[in-house]
Length: 583
Image 1 (spheres, one colour):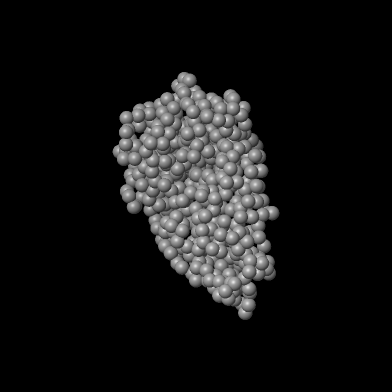
Image 2 (cartoon, rainbow, N blue to C red):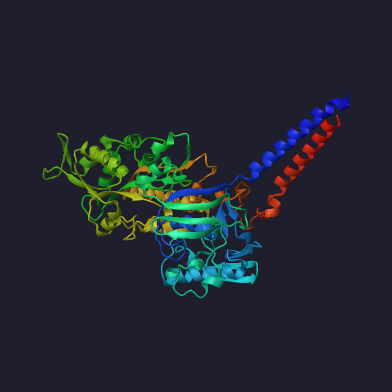
């Protein structure tokens, strides 16, 4: 009887062997030959060219690593294996062993020391490096204790979460043996300028066209899933076309309005998030009557924020505003008790207390003339839509409004010149609102005539405060802004990262706690095999951080499972033939 069951037993063994082999091949082949992302031209992708805008940072992260990085659930060690805060100002960093530069030379502690000192030199003497300029001079000294241990000393005590989130994750480590003789860092664009320890090597940069990268198969965290990564320069107006024509696999959209045509297509998936962007109404406090706080409060009460929210698409499009509060509603610092509810009655009551008279749907001043305002609006579709609603709201309290349209790229210039009365502006960087540069002429955040010493004091303290202290400070911050009304937030838009779900790259994420935004949604960990094991939450304490081992495998290790599958199938076939021929 047992012999009669042997064919069934061996058939089962054969089928299991074949399934094992097939699964091993699928697992081994779980890679993407080419992945194309719509991007913008940010110039030569090395850290010291001086490109002033955010999109350069994620590009640099593909080639250059930092001591720590942004995991899915917290800050994780990257080039650092571990760290420890030994006292109020001194940190000891243990480096990973076996990390190699893309030219084959080993990473050592001397590279860390050189990178920090060289970046400080460039930032202070040549051109500000925006992602480090606010903190680089807080570093007093950096020393190599041995080949894999670095000591960093700060000028003052800095909370551990600030060190990790703003310093260890933002300082690109560059090879000393390449950069030590570079005297013109901005002009250094030869092939060696792009050598880092990162998961991708630059193959080609074609200005105005594309960046082409190839996988660094020896990357210490593991082999990149995508073999050839292309960042294609695509105008925002053509991203929809490129996505639907299958010419790019992923793209970032600054609003629901822009991404909407793709969101109903089953071929695409998306991640929506708040990136610290806001549409705001800025007052020129150097002009009457906008220099009167009560008058600015009138405008805050007169605007129908819900109407703006609904007109722009509701929840899929973003978050409704509550007036002057410039802390995003998705921020851990947000306090919803600070705001203004839409009330025409309150607006008119305050106006009458200021000497205005509301008669026959016109707001008259003391001389009997109707109050008129020029509203400057950039040629951004969302800003234009909001502008029409603001115009209607102000006219509902009797103010005559004239809309003046301007090119969006002239906003900063017009702010600096003060050539406006009220203007719809677009603020970025509000994930860290305590760095709102309202008093810096030339900044996109500039508010002419507003100079609150209290706010400046809070911002200065909040930058170097612990999280709990910062929450208290930003609570006071929100109270001051709500009372002073230097600006009015009109809408908080969502960003959309849309990607082709059929290509095989998923798991894109964004965490508001990181505040600075970088690396935004393009996080290199998503492109690394086994990156999930690198997203464990790191405990941000002065006692140090757990060591997270490398996920890298040698080629021979990565072939073990397929080889075993082949062997099992061959044995199954031999046994099968033996049984049936013997019968």
